[in-house]
Image (cartoon, rainbow, N blue to C red):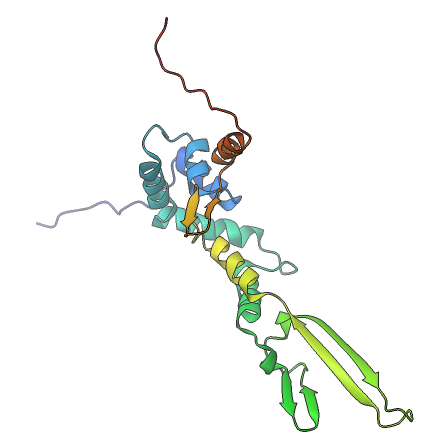
Length: 204
C-alpha cells in the first residue's frame, strides 16, 4: 500500500527573521540587527553573537539577502561583485605592472589592454631639457591607490571583523578598536575620567 506524503512546503521567514534580514541588508552588524529585530540580548555577548551569526548564515536569510540585492541592483550602480573586483585590482596591482626601468629610463605602459588600471590614483609627467634647450626627457610618475585600504574595505564587506571591541596589545601600547556605539561611549567616558555608575540593586 502506497503511503501518500504531502509535499514539503518551503519555510518562510518569520516576522522577526525578516526584520533581522532587512537590518543586515541595510548595513547593521549582526549583533545590532539581532537586538533591533526583537531577539533577546540578556545573555552573554558571545552567546548573542553566536545566535546572530547562526541566523545570518542560515540558508533562508542568505536566500532573502540575495533576493533583496537583486531587486535593488541597478545597471548604472556598481554591485557588490563589481566593487570587490575593483578593490581586488587595487590590492593586487604593483607599480611594475605599469612601469619598466631600462637603460634609456623609465617606460610607462598604460592602455585599454593593460589589466588593473583601476588601481591607478594619479599620473603626472614633466619634460626636462638640457642646458641648450634640446634633448627633451619626459619623466612620468604613477601613483597607486593604497592596497591596505582596499583589503580593509573588503574585510569589512565580508564581515571578517568581529563585532564589539578588539584589543591589540604589544610591549609599547594597547590599541582598542571599538565598533559598537554603546561600548565606544563607555570607553570615551573612561578616557574623560568619568566613573560609570552601576545599579547595585541594594536600597538603603
